[in-house]
Image (cartoon, rainbow, N blue to C red; front, side, top):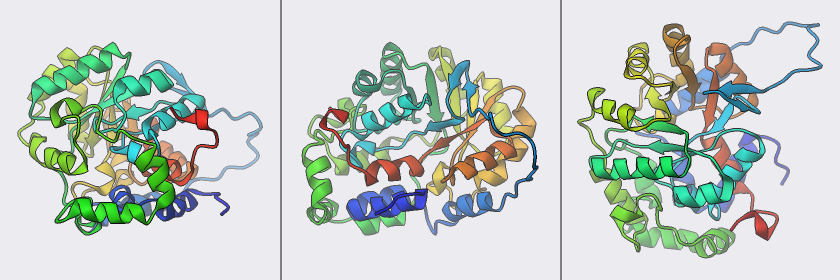
Length: 347
């Protein structure tokens, strides 16, 4: 198969992955209206085309938080990436390093912070709002010790969204483990490369609370029980006082919340609706960015995610007022679609 676009990577990933994994990354919450609007609203942004402007020496370089980047793009945090390719977080971090862009490791990654840093160097780290504050403090300490300079704090998931595809696919619901096993048996290339050679599959960063022999079922139960719906802006003050590096608040859709993030002392925000995986019916990020940029463009680095599938989409987000974007599904589709060419590519 010739792969020439993000849509091609998606189709290749769909063919290679067990259904429960493809639907987990591909799906959204409830009727998936916001998931669709993220893509559709962005595609409707019209660009002005000027001509005869001498574009023979165009540079895509930019800088975020004082760091020079090769592109105005980062690889955003996506959970369970190590299930999509063998030690997937390390692969993704290496690819990001090669292109001089940041990679942000999810709290719920298969590879823990130390493994990714050993394999790829400096990374960003993403943290959820968890009821167990001691667990959060310990993770922050590990991230700082490992040299992470930027913390991305996700605030739009006080409770997990209702993702119907997960119940239908076997990611959750009755007999989930048996259904996942049957699906894996039907994808032998994935089963060998990831299911067997990609072990261990425990979630490295949360292994201390889940236990050494934990699996996806344990993770889904922990996820439902440990997000903190009582969190407020006041509660985030201890994050700012504890974390000495760059602080980015992820999950902002309203100008008022962007100002609150600024007043908290954040260095940046991510305009995000969690890829349409949380509050279905919320604004698309393309619709939200302009007002937020007008409100805080002089005070914060404004990143955006959700719905970005192509380089043209990146350009549209920049035109709307973002300083750059974090990719999500787009890079995971590519990771899942292709196997490493050389054994030494993955440890």
